[in-house]
Image (tube, rainbow, N blue to C red):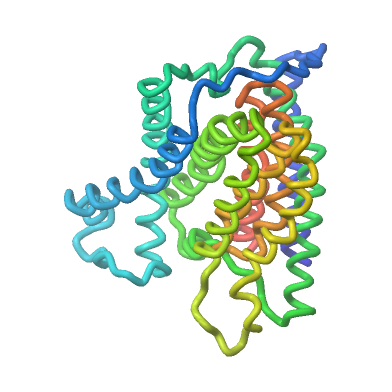
Length: 337
């Protein structure tokens, strides 16, 4: 219940602060842009290359930082060496640095790949600045309407796990840094969740993937298959006698349950594209179960806005504000003791 109260307080604070900024921009007349289908010059090759970039660039950056002794330079010579046990605080700090520094590099890699292979410009991917005030206002309004729904689903799924399955929901690995976080860690954490993650994920899912899937109905199936594969791969967890056996396959089952809904809309490629890309977006967060369930609804809203405006500004704003609520709730919780 305390977590719920902190989240509600964080949402209210973000609504007031962000609402003041939006009003200061004076977007008194919001555009109603139901854009025609955009031309998608890039192919499946670029989409796959984009996803590989988001895997390979952080891995290469991690190796580079380790070889340069970056972490010991920042934290001192006693900083623990890298290990395969990825849940230690030291590993979480490494992950945080790699995410903050690697996210923009991933975006640059995607922009370069699509530009060189198909002539796709940043504008084609959604970096449009024709009416930024209106796009920011659209993102704020979507966030204001969607966030309570997403967090309500999150609360219900968590309570279901607690009372029906007798299992506590998973915590994100980065939240393990919160109890002993210093100013630098809090700053990095805030930059990651409110700026870098919204930018990188929107470029990948709503900029690169969604328009490609929504262009043709036969692209829905490979997207759902990829979601099922990622749900199984990232949702895999070591056996635990305190957990029911089915929990290991819960993310995959969730994707399979959503699949009929996605395929039922195949005759409307834009709708099917929004749903399919939202399923994959949620599936990639399967390591923290049951987070994919509410994130599916977030992905649907962000996808709808991206197609409606053909711009990533609104989705990035909505995504950043959504993450800001979780960040503020953690920060309030630590300050309150």
